[in-house]
Image (tube, rainbow, N blue to C red; front, side, top):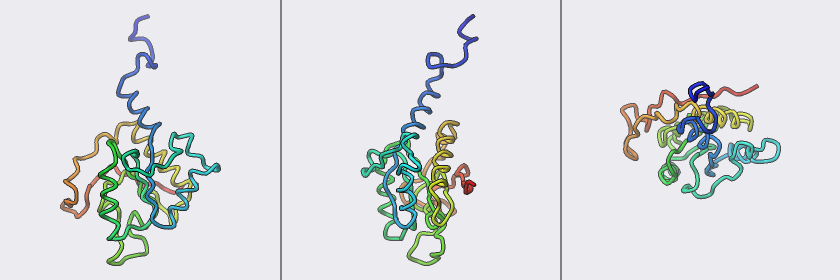
Length: 185
C-alpha cells in the first residue's frame, strides 16, 4: 500500500485544505451593530444559540483583531465613511455579512439619509434577510460563509477598486458570488 492509496488525513492532506479549515474555524467578528438587528446579533452570542461552537464566541471591539464584519442595521450616509474605515482596518482575508433588509437594501428607509445597500460601501459576501432577521438566520448566514470559505469560492474575490472608487454600476464590488440566504424554517 503506497501513499497514493491513502485517503487524505492530517499527514497527507493538502496545505490549502488545512488553511481553509483553520480560517473557517477561527472567524472573529467585529462589533458593528447600528439598529434593531444588533439585538438579534447579540443574542446569537448567548447560551441559546452559542456561536462559540463555531469558534466565534468573542466579538472583537478592534477591527485589527477581526476578520468578519456583520453589518447589522441601517447605515446612514454619515456612518458610511466610518464603516469603510473599519473595513479597511480589518486584517486580510476579511468577510462581510449584511444582516437585515435595512443593511441589504435600505429597507423601508428610501430617503437621502440612508445608504440603499451596504454593498455600495463594502463588498458583501452573504446577505441575511429579515426585519430583523432571527438569530437562526444569522447562524445560517455564518454557516453559509463557512461553506464558501471551505469550498475556496471566497478566495476568488474579484479585485476591488481603490477605496471609494465606485464601479460602473455604482457599487463598490459587483460580486456575483455573494449569497442571499433564505430564512431557515
